[in-house]
Every structure is written in structure tokens, then in C-alpha cells.
Image 1 (cartoon, rainbow, N blue to C red):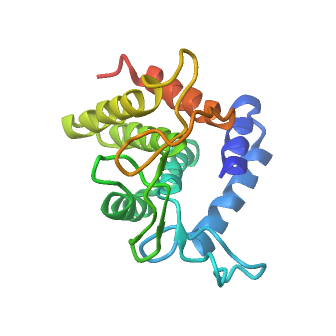
Image 2: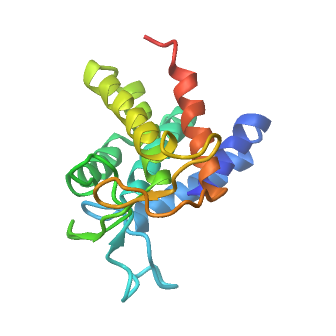
Length: 203
């Protein structure tokens, strides 16, 4: 995912087609191996068969991250990714959230919960997906989803933390599990709110 993202950014900043060609190779790999009938698989063996132990372990947050990535890829190439986005969104919406609305850390491919905890990065990727979906099909429902995603991030992860820091993970009821603020989460926060600022003045 991050290589796919980096290649697209490289293309945007250099106009060198080699980066988009390499991104397209990853997109083709995604379409031929990663995306399954109704969900995104993540753990494979060397021959791209599903890993025996973890092949059914799914991150709903990655479903949402791929929605944002694929939307961006369509902007650069014109390739229609709507059907794939529909698959990712339907699965994540149906199985990937706790009752409090937060995105779960991990589930099984059959939709059953594996870890009902919720890390911050999953929520930022959901926010980015909501923004991408709103751009693809603007509506009040889509706009409300963006607003709710922002509210969840502040209520559960930013407001309870010390100034300048964040709660990284909460339990199934929304209560903080630790006081750590991993630096890796800053990337997700920065990019999600950069996307929010980018669309802030759009109708």
C-alpha cells in the first residue's frame, strides 16, 4: 500500500511515467491476488496462496485505506475502480465496526471479530475513505460520514490525550488501553487532516 502511494506521489511531483507504470504493476497485483470475492486478503505465501495461519485475518482499516488509494489512482489514470471500491466498502461497513462506530483492528474473513480493539490509524483511514467517497459522489449522507469520522477521532483519541499527543488504541467500549503515542500514527493523522483541509472549502 505505501509503495503504491509513494509511486503515485513520485509521478505527481516528477511527471515521469516510470513511477505511474510501476504503480500500475502494483494495481494489477492487487486485482489479480489481493482482492477476493468479497474482501481484501492480506497475508500470503510466496506463491500468493493465502497463508495457512493468517490468511483469513483481515484489517478493516486497510479496506478503507485502499478505497482512498484506488480513488487517487483513478484520478491519475482514468481506470474505473468503482466495482472494487464497492466490494471493499461493503465488507468493511458490514463487519469492520464496533457498536460505538469505531473501526475494529482485526476481523476474520467471515466477518467475525478477531480483535475488537480500535487503533487510531484505522479511524484516520476511514476518514480518508469517507472523503474519497464524498468526492466521488457528493451527498449530505457522505458529508455526514466525514463529520462523524472526525468527531470519533477527537472524542476517543485526541481530546483524552495530553496536548500534542494522541491515544493510540481503545477497547471495544472506547476506553484508552495505553498512554503511548507511537510516531507511526502521526503519518496517518497528518495525511487524513491534510485531506480534510483540502476539501474544506468545496461544496
